[in-house]
Image (cartoon, rainbow, N blue to C red; front, side, top):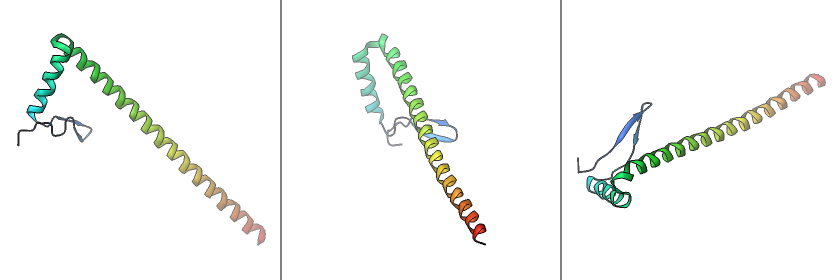
Length: 98
């Protein structure tokens, strides 16, 4: 391995990469800067806050995605319903002409 750390976890048969290809030196620099900015007592609290924010963002984006998919399905059902109505009306007109 070329000195890179890849942190991942398994979620429903799908491998999700957390940090991509951040190398160990880059990760140490990020942690050192965070430690300098927030201090050792605040760092765990900041980490929890960031984790909560990311979970909320993911939950909200999943909800939005579900709503969009529902709207697409509703539009598709409306199109199918209109086509079905047209077919029924065409069949009824065909019976009247016979």
